[in-house]
Image 1 (cartoon, rainbow, N blue to C red):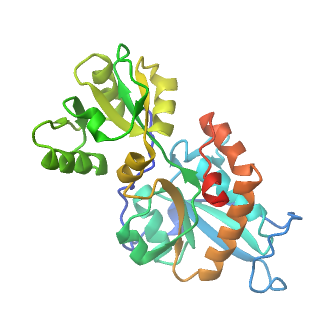
Image 2: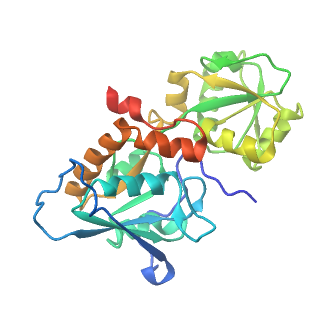
Image 3: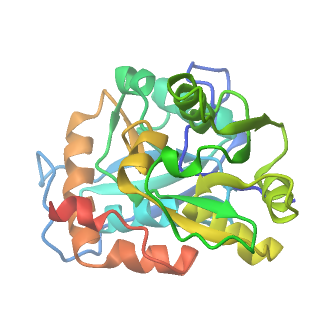
Amino acid sequence: MLTLTACSSNNESNGSTNNTNDTSNNDVVSGDGYAGNSNNSSDNNSEVVTITVSTSATTAPFSYTDDNNNVVGYDVDVAKAVFERLPQYELEIEVIELHSTLAEVDAGRAQFSANNWNKTSEREEKYYFSDPILDCRYTALFAPDKDISYVENLDDLAGQSTIVTAGSNVTVILEDYNVQNPDNPIIINYSDKDFAKMAQDVQDGKYDFVLYPKVMVDIYKDVYHFDLTSAEVGTDLTSSLFNGNPYAYFIISKENEQLLTDINAALAEIQLDGTVKAISEEYFGEDYSASDWYKN
């Protein structure tokens, strides 16, 4: 079974739990050897501070354990690269069950979490969000005989059928569209199937299309070898599908404002110097870094 997450809200528990570090694995990454310019600490002469990041190591390709039992993945490697630029800190990676990753931040056992986090209003009330670490994009998948390469907006999908998961952000947006366009709605079919089975249904002609984050589609195609037509989704529609925030972020405790400042400064460096691009290409085969956001 392929375990993946997308650029979307993870269904974790945000409350504190009784989980302790006794059930987690911890790796340490030191930034002491970096000779760069990110002297972002409020006191560069102070002792090195240990910062703990919580992650599940079960959500490939963002966070997982490799064959050598090392915690790796896009989010994890970006976090490591950030702290290589911050010699005032030593990064400790705590592996914990996905539903407890933010509970560790709540309890103060971790100062931030790296697990392909999407920004939501509920989370913004409780946590700081770093600047973007990943540029999320949507794609529309059609049967292989369809001649379509671009979907500007939902009007381009009107009258066609799709398969969705009830309650997802995509589903809510499609439902709202149908309320506003009752004469030519998108035909919505609800299912609890995983994406691989949904994509197979589209390939088999049961439905016209399915919408899904592009980075995950590329990974699924490599694993399942789907024969589907991919159509790029317009910028405005992509933004809507991600609640106006088409990026992934680190989530940081609101007790750590200086850490937020330091992480963001280092992120800007590694986004603009190509470090994050190289990490993205390693895991995805394509540039999903958010460097364009930092250039604006």
